[in-house]
Structures are given as structure tokens and as C-alpha cells.
Amino acid sequence: MNYRHIYHAGNFADVMKHLALALVLEYLQRKDAPLCIIDAHGGIGMYDLNSVEAQKTREWEEGIGQFKDAAIPEDFKIYYDLVKHDLAAHQYAGSPKLINRMLRVQDRLIANELHPEDFETLKENLRREKNAVVTNLDAYECIRANIPPKEKRGLVLIDPPFEKTDEFQTLIKQMQEWKKRFATGVYLLWYPIKSHLAIGGLKEAATALGIPSTWCVETLMYPRHVENTFNGSGLILFNAPYQVPARYEALLPFLKERLGLVDTASQWLVSDR
Ligand SMILES: C[S@@+](CC[C@H](N)C(=O)[O-])C[C@H]1O[C@@H](n2cnc3c(N)ncnc32)[C@H](O)[C@@H]1O
Image (tube, rainbow, N blue to C red):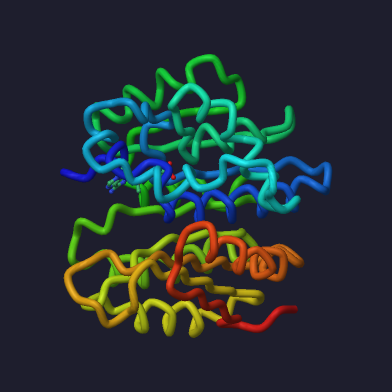
């Protein structure tokens, strides 16, 4: 396990992912019924942008660093308001912290992280939070152990580091399990776009699952054919909450301009209900 998110915290991919996360949660919380949120690859929860690691890459400058002024659309504010105070202190909140900030009393968070040191840091960062538990399992074991949740309403974030060459194959198998166990769950899955990766296979498998309202969005920093780089970032959202895809799509021109993206694309893999 070599991947450490501190090198990438707040980069353009985090912005794309955390924006989707905030919009999904905000929509799900329009109903009072309790929610269970599973963050299967939690990371450490809070990142010091002044750390040696973050300073080495300074990726946040091209990501969350591009939104400092006030001229931001309302829907982007749902996410930005969650992170802006930390930014002033050169910190960036990761997914478990962002989710935790949105939790209502009736909701709960299961934040999971496998890396032993990062698990301890995450536990420390969520120490005071009553509705959050932190676990130290393999992500797919964690999901299996917790779905379907007793609330019957849930969001699962899947955000692997893609260090393993068979991660796409694993995901394709796991997605089938998730559908069998909790077909009505909302799943948000992040993936990298690189010229050699089999993105098409992942999207085909997601389509074949036939979960209603499965939507996909991709944002590119470099054209898809450019080799040996991290070309872009993709998200698949299963059981996409009503209007979240349309609201996200409406933000794409703003994101393209601010993040200097070369292209964006979105599509329904399985049609809207
Ligand atoms: C991309 S980072 C997560 C970032 C976090 N979701 C966020 O948005 O702030 C991926 C994390 O997954 C952890 N990880 C790697 N393999 C894992 C596994 N099999 N199960 C659970 N976590 C794993 C890594 O240690 C890393 O912290």
C-alpha cells in the first residue's frame, strides 16, 4: 500500500468527487428518514496543505485553489461552503470529514481505511463525532458487512487508489454483489482516466447491471490519447438522486473554465426513471 492521498488532496479529481458527494447527500437529506453513509476508502479525513508531501506536488493549487473568489454558482457553494474555512488555514477536508459535516442527528457514517497509519489518523480526526464509526477493513469487506443498512437508505462512496492492476476487474465483480445485497442503494464510484486503462469495460459492466438512473461524468485535464499521464477523472453514480446529474451537468462549463479542463462528458448508462 504505497498510495497516500496527502500528495493529491484538493486536486481537480477531489473537487469533482466531493462536489458530487455533497450534491447527492444534500438531495438525500431532503427527506427526514435516516441515512447510512459508507465511505469505504476514507483516507485520513483532513489534509495539511503545508505538509512536505502536499508541498511536493502542490496539486490543490490547480484544484480547490481555483475557487477563491465569491463568484461561484449556488450548487457549487453546497460543496465549497464545507471546505472554505479549512482552506484559510491551509487544510483540506477529505470525504469522511465532509460527510460528517453534513450528518444530521438521525444519520450515521461508517468511515473505513485499510492503511494502518492512515486508519489511526482518521480515527483521531473523527474522535469527537458521535454518529461516526471508523473501521480498519478491506473496503469491499466493509461494504459487504454493512449493506443493506438497517436504515434501508444509504450512500456508498467507493474511491480506490487503483494501485492494483486488477482493480477494475474487482470492481466489476463487486458491483454485482452490491446490486444483489442492496439494489436501491446510491453508489458513487470514482475512477481514473489513463490512456491504457480499460474504462470502457467498467462502464459496460455498470450499464449491464441495469440499476435504474445510472449516470457517468468524466472530466479531462489532458486528451484521452495522451500517454503516461493522469488524463482525467470519472464518476459513476448508481441510483442517481433526482436532478443531481442535471445540476452537476449545469456546473460543468464553470468547472471546465476554473479547472482548465480540456473536455468534459456525461451520459446516462441506464436511463433515468
Ligand atoms: C483516493 S484515497 C481516498 C480519499 C478519500 N476518499 C477522500 O476523498 O478524501 C484512497 C484510500 O484508500 C485506502 N485503501 C487502499 N486500499 C484499500 C482497501 N483495500 N480497503 C480500504 N482502503 C484502502 C488508501 O490507503 C487511501 O487512503
